Image (cartoon, rainbow, N blue to C red):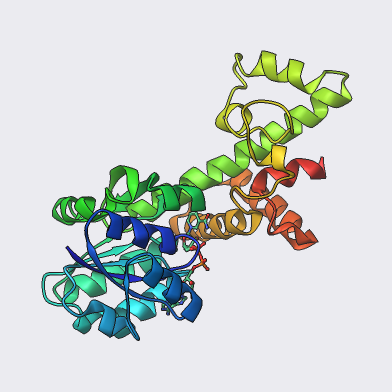
Length: 289
Ligand code: NAD
């Protein structure tokens, strides 16, 4: 397929390269000349603007920083420049309301659109092993699936427009809550005289077991290899977790959902990031205990 790709940063760069590797023709645009040069080295055709990248495109894929940028890119440049019948696939993590607004504007102009945020970080983007959570009509989902499967290991339909973003922020709010809970439990166990490995051996086969404990343990040297074993470098940055928690808090307010633990987790990550820890993996929050 002929695919336009917009946003070739940490995530988008590897994703565009995987589309090329799968045999697609990728016309790419990013505001950063460095990102564009890297995309050219990976086999993409670099373009000077979004409309130029959209010329002849059967699909438009974007991986951009936030909702405002996604809204202005689609409503200001992609709509009208992309040929009739092109499918729009936004993989950025943005707020549910903006995702629904952009999809509605695309539909009004006669295009199908899905929101398709990802689970998995830079390594999964480079390795083509992302999980996509997709919001849009059944028909739009089927068309997007062909493109997304070249960049991921799982592509899951979450329902109508915006539901991909809803799944992503609910999942990450839960992740923040159980990472903090796991950190508290390990810290208290130690204060009560339990060795962390012993606590892990017991709790990992008891009812406290959870992903933050057994796949991503915040305690160095305990459980499988994770960022805590590398001084909390790499992994999922605290700054990105905070971005997702802020989106979750906005969504809770607009949907009138009660999220007392989510709100507490957001406040704790605000403090942790504010103390200069944005770049550390989010499991480093255990240091505050
Ligand atoms: P990034 O900052 O590395 O990349 C964003 C790219 O978009 C940059 O290269 C920037 O130059 C480009 N850009 C900004 N405005 C543009 C515009 N108007 N036109 C064209 N290009 C423009 O960010 P990232 O880490 O790649 O994240 C992208 C998205 O993926 C975000 O929404 C983020 O929340 C989400 N995400 C990131 C991760 C991760 O681990 N990095 C994981 C899951 C989801």
